[in-house]
Every structure is written in structure tokens, then in C-alpha cells.
Image (cartoon, rainbow, N blue to C red; front, side):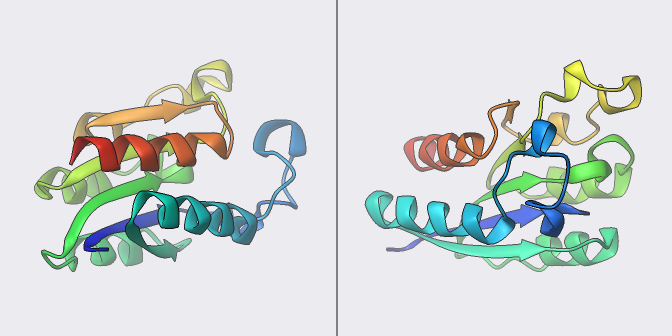
Length: 144
């Protein structure tokens, strides 16, 4: 299993299971990670998980990735709509990158309908709940 993939979850995603269930579902971040680990065994890849509420920590994590990583799956949370710096960090990386959002950002508040991150990624999966992460992992492995 040489294919290393980093799964990044941004601000407030450690609060899954405590947030508005109608928007974010009724699972925890640990539940999501466990499902992804099961899927990674089937797909033959290694996953590392990182969650932070701090923009700079996420950027440092991305910038510090070594060449053993083949991809990033990121749910940037609220940074989606505000972080030019996160966009720039992702844009620098030449590995496969997928933006994932649990909710449909285009059916929510106006300020959530613009992603600064999407142009720095190869694709986006939006509004499919935790299944979006599973689909992202499968798609990434298929396309590296």
C-alpha cells in the first residue's frame, strides 16, 4: 500500500455529531474516519487524517507534505469561502486534490455559495454527506 492520501477537515468539523443534524448528519468525525479506513483497505491505500480549526496549521500541513503522498481530500469548512492562502497552498501542490463538502453549499446562505478552494482542486464533491468522502477516495485512487 504505497498510495498515501491526506484527509483534511477544517474548522468545526471535529464537532460533527453535535452540529445541526439536518445539515451535517448524525455521525462524528471519528465515525467518518473509521468508514474511510475500511474503504482504504479495500482500495489498497494508506490514509492520514488531519483536522484543525486554525488556517495556518492546515496550510503548514499541506506545504509540508513529502512526495510519498499521491493526493489530498479536503473539507475546508468555513475556510472554503474566505481563504486565499489555503487556495494558494493547494494550488502549489501537483498531486490530485478533491474538495468535499457534506452539505450542498449552493443551497445554503449566500456567503457559502462561493468556493475559493475549488479552482485549486481537480474536482469537488458537494452535498452527499459522508458518502462524498467515500466517493472522493474511490475517484482519487482511480485517477492517480
